[in-house]
Amino acid sequence: MSVAAINESAQYLTFRLGEETFALDVGKVREILDFTVVTKVPQTPPFMRGVINLRGSVVPVMDLRTKFGMTETVKTVDSCVIVVEMKLEDDLLVMGVLADAVQEVIDMAPEQIEPPPRIGSKLNTEFIFGMAKHDQQFIIILDIDRVFAGEEVAVAAQASQQAA
Image (tube, helix red, strand yellow):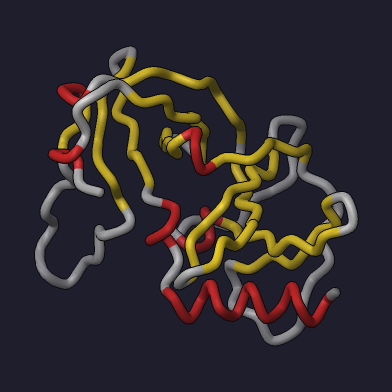
């Protein structure tokens, strides 16, 4: 869905990765968990931290900081796992993404959201839904269905099946 297609206010969960503020559509967020023990799965990409047991289900956990070229997420008192639902072809995949800290749920009207910036043809910004300004800071709104490429999500799904 493009920014232009939005015609009513929507709610977004804001969170921090380093000094930057990001947001996800609340409709994609299942729950927020404390950063707990993550079991590493061999031969997975560096941004896949491993899997967790979520009430008997194996859930892959991805490190957005690593995926975005930052340093690996370090466990602190504020670190958490945001459990999201992502589309994988015709299926829904439950996945955890690490965040340095969750901030708040905010309402944003369509006029507050601008399309992602064009940064040349070599940089992929498809995973950025839009940019917004809230309380004098920029918020990068992610399209979680596009943050990870299809093969990356497939690797995560396969790793969680193997761990089960």
